[in-house]
Amino acid sequence: MLRTFVSGEGEIPSSGLVSDYLAELHFRISHLSGGAVASYIPELAKADPKLCGIAIATIDGKTYSAGDADVEFTIQSVSKPFVYGYALERHGREAILQRVGVEPTGEAFNSIVLDEVHNRPFNPMVNAGAIAIAETIKGATPTERAQNMLTLFSRLAGRRLSIDEQVYRSELETGHRNRAIAYMMLNSGMIRRAPEDILDVYFRQCAVRVTARDLAVMAATLANDGVNPLSGERVIATEYVSDILTVMNTCGMYNYAGQWSYDVGIPAKSGVAGSILAVIPGQLGIAVFSPPIDQHGNSVRGVAACKEIAQDFRLNIFRSHVSTSTVIRRELYGDIIHSKRARNPLERRLLSETGRRICIIEVQGPLFFGSAERLIRRIGDVQSTTSHVILDFRRVPSADEAASQLLARLAGAFNETGRKLLISHLAHQPALATLHEAMEQALPEQIFEHRDAALEWCENAVIAEAGIQFDATRFSLSELHIFKSLARDDLRLLEALARPMIFEAGDRIIRTGDPARLFFVIARGTVTVELADAVQATHQNLRIASMGPGLSFGEMALLDGGTRSADVVANERVVCYGFSVDAIHELGRTHPHVLTTIYANMMRDFSERLRRANDEIRALEQ
Ligand code: DON
Image (tube, rainbow, N blue to C red; front, side, top):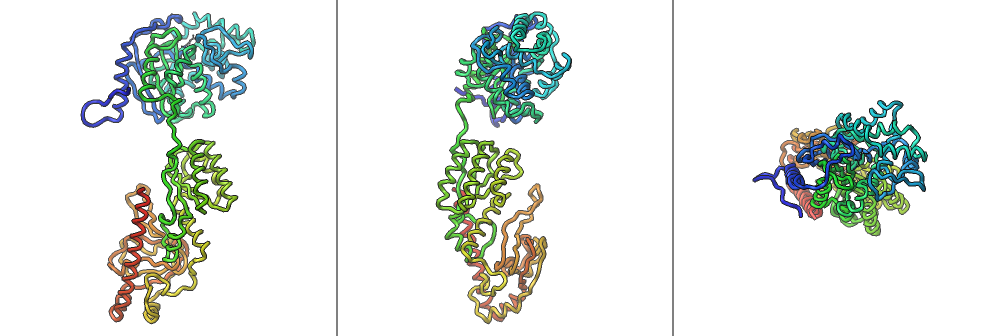
């Protein structure tokens, strides 16, 4: 049962929740008796059995602790998985597998058993395997090897570590069992260098001084795919992290590994100085330090604390937390949801009648095989009723290799059918780089920075297919919604007022705050309506609409005659007609019905836009 761990009255301090939990847990387990401080290395026997520290580090670098989490002790066997990772990175998987196997022994950490069939130690977590692995530490001299080993651990902890000379010397003088193992391995060719040389660096590696907090950070480095969450430095290559975790899971707790996995379900490693390090991939690292150890060499209080944490926080890795069911946030269709491109009435009607052929899928959460497969299956279902599918990846934090490959295959299949798959929001996200690359190869023309641009592209395609493109070169004023239903004579009067104007790309046709004296009708080119958005940190303008030939802008000036409320910028060379607001009002004095008709047309347009906006809001709120 998860106990209550809210601290005090009033506001809940966000980090206090976890710290208070650890404080309560520490209180309970620090009173546990049982076990004894390791004494086979005489210097270790001096440890204070009452010491007890717990630390947790998250993959974004937050650490929590309780008790003696900052007391230094020697890392001992907890060093083994990290030197194993170092060896894998230096020599590759195959070469290291030839030297050391990955089979649990079911025996004690210091057992003198070797895999005679394959002529190698059973695994890198028992002493024999760890000694064979220590042979791979680079350096021409003992000092160089010790230095390289210490650099590795300092990078893992995110601070400069040192070696406990007393513990090192103590084990050097008394570690005859390890010496025996090393000589046996030399005898059968499992190691090549002089045993004393290898043991020297192995004993030093075991004597690195760390705290529970350091071990939690090292565990979080494994949880974080090899990147130290404090320093941001990659210390272990991604491809070997799962190898390390696998051997930790099967062999990390020695002849207790099976029961540990059954009870706790978290890859872990223990050391005889009394520490346990546990890794919850993608979440956090846990470390507990308390010197009394049991008959397996595992800290008694460490085992108890890890069991409770795993149970209370549901951290068993075999109780998978990932769900594929939420990969689709929602689906939207082009008959209801429109791009910011303003359309003429004909186009608007066409889009509300046939826009359902455009489907937008908002994807969310990390993409991996399971979630990508589910997404692809849904795309397959909507395909029969759509010609365009837009995948909006704005809410996707990461996509692994498997998901990237599946989606690239999907893109290829789309290309063959003639249907269009469009992608948005993939750029500038490092965790989506592989997917971005795969998609760019498959769909070079269909990757958009923003969803709106992708939607506009689809709408244009649907409109072009229907053959109702507005002929920008020859249109009469009667085709404009604002002048709709006016008699030919009235239109002639208006034609006489039209002033042809040309703007070049980037020209600001209308500026926010300027007096509103003209309204415009576009004959050629497109413009963008932007809100000057000083609030945004980027100081970028917010695009609210774009419009092309046959559409008018700035007509609000006819109503209020005040100042401009937005900027309008030419996207390319724009040919348009400007109508003076004063001249139209003047015309209204002699021909009042002209002004009334224009107002009625504007009102109709506004109410239609409002209705469409309401429909969109309704669809977006679902
Ligand atoms: O090799 C040894 O005996 C020690 N230096 C390390 C053993 C160890 O920590 C075993 N783990 N529980």
